[in-house]
Length: 246
Image 1 (spheres, rainbow, N blue to C red):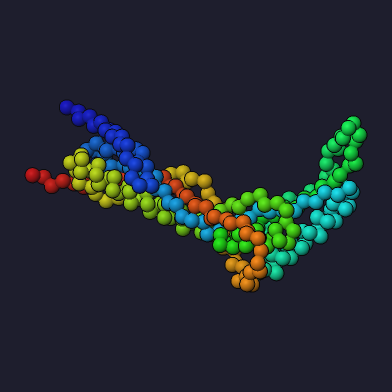
Image 2: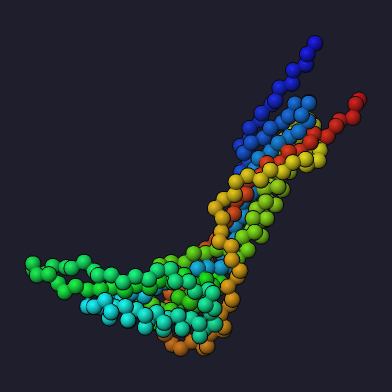
């Protein structure tokens, strides 16, 4: 007589803190395995940032618009360098000069105007992001497009998410084994799933030099570092330990 073994699929809705249980498979006697697919999630406060800011100037001639943009751009960059930043941490993101559309007032065409713009991406530690914005605005920057929060070591964050997924995978496997009346054996396979959106990999930017004692000024902008999340999905396969014969 032939003995047919069927694969039993058990699906659980298990959502431990920060982890989503997805698929659980309990193998037949011939497979002797328990397979768990789970996702680990880690959240940390950003320790790195990219500040996006710029300067724009409107003039009646292209040369005048461009010259003032160059002058002010050099002043803004010099201010940041004097504060202790490195040229490696300042990236020119945009530079353009163009004619603005003519506006009509009472049917009369306005004089043509030209606008020159510069934009920079400035890499700093999260704690220095606000100071960079304050320095640049004081030096003449007239636009702040936002801050991209990140982490300096995305690999370490990924490893923490992997560890969280692995730990919860083990916890779920132990519960499944107990419910099935079997004993969980050794871990035989780990399969990494798709990662969540990655992060730019770069060395931590240097901290700026301590600022001088502040002079009385109007209340400044306050930035709040965001949280960075990493999700890692893994599949773990555990053997079912051999049960002693009664």
